[in-house]
Length: 228
Image (cartoon, rainbow, N blue to C red):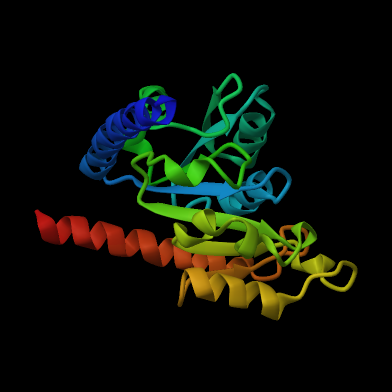
């Protein structure tokens, strides 16, 4: 009986979140701001990827970052130092961001002066994938030291992702990571998934990631223009 009462409550919460997420999307669309939701486990390199992305796109795209974390403003400070306008969300224990949190953060950003909004979700491979935020694209950052079994252990996250970044490939010679096994696991869940192997230390693979971002945003703008 307890379970039957819990399920409707969870469904109501998710439904309310989805409505707010749709409002967030509409707001971003109306202002021509493209947004990505970056998910990963702790330490995979979400913030490092942002630190490498923002300065490399300086002069081309105006970037804002919403940083989600349990506590502290460390990641927001890193994003700001890299050249982005940043807002920190401390979830106070929640293992994921929710649409209302993002909505509140949007009110603090100069969205009229932003081309790309990067939302860095809380480091977690379980909860974030189940909560819509209103962003346009879900990006998952996997890292070589985590191991090649993550697609098999966290299928919901890998199934719901739009783009995959495999970070820390500079460590491939030093850790046990079977790239073929990893890619096979990803392919089972998300066939044809766009994937970027990168190193935020050496810079390997980053040009392809940046080119994809620029192309995706250009396509987004063209689609908005055609819809008017």
